[in-house]
Image (spheres, rainbow, N blue to C red):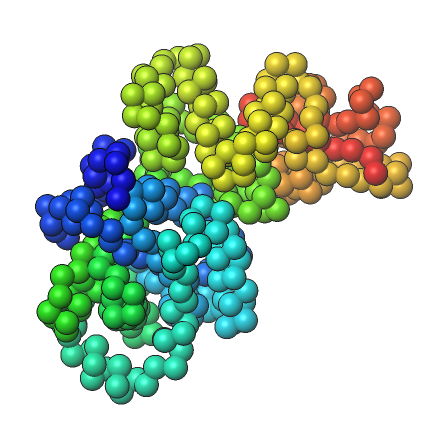
Length: 412
């Protein structure tokens, strides 16, 4: 067990905990013995995202305090899809794609969680869900669930108007079954997850308590949102990924460097291991000084996800840009051939190719509003073409969108 105090107090002070089924019992349990707990990850993509990062940080805090995490990959539940927080049914994926995604998740989780010597477990619910006998499942598990009660759950209520399929209605039973299965197999007594999982987590807690007459607990974490209540971890280009091939360390760093001032202290608290005194000191900075706090935040998060060397590179690249509009190998770069550049490439195409704009119409709007500069010169003509002759003395065309979006064009 940790000598640094009760991890429940740590998670509470840092702002993680949103709801707990039995707060006093959970705190007492986490303070006196090593607890096996689990968090589920449905394999809906081939990389974890910034949205997953908060729950991974919670797992790391728990493991550092002497508790044993189970990372449960949703090879089975992803076949159905969780209706929580979704306005429409999730697209159905092939088993092969789900298996591939689950393997990628396992690789990434290994960077944050120590799975050696049974310090943590990685499991996949495909192992027990895909071959279930449906009649047996209903007799064994279905009898413990009241449809009336399920329909009052938040995850189902918001879907009732549009229509909730029976296919998705099974999801809560399957997630509850996972908890029961992990309880039987690994002595897992606690499920953790984002606050949108509350209804599903309660389902599992009550199933174990009814079926096994044994204690089981649930705990949910705050969901990271912007001040408008939109889930954090999204950009115009889409999700902020933990895979450096999908979101470069520089782009990852820049995302956190540019978050809203009001969110800096919360993110320092939840997404770094900085002591809380330092978090509060940085969070209290105002006006221009808050930029220092944002630099610390971006560096610390990038260091945890991509390592210290990549964090330093990203920080140096960002500073070089802000200092003198300079160029850096760590800034996202697109290379065009001599032939392409000889013919000239129009600005709309450059913006879409570099993903500074998601569509040609959005690129046109950006140019129209005066939001695009090329080598520090504002460009307002849509059809302006750029050739190798427009490159600066370093052989670079630096496109800037607003104050925060940068991309280099090079000749290859």
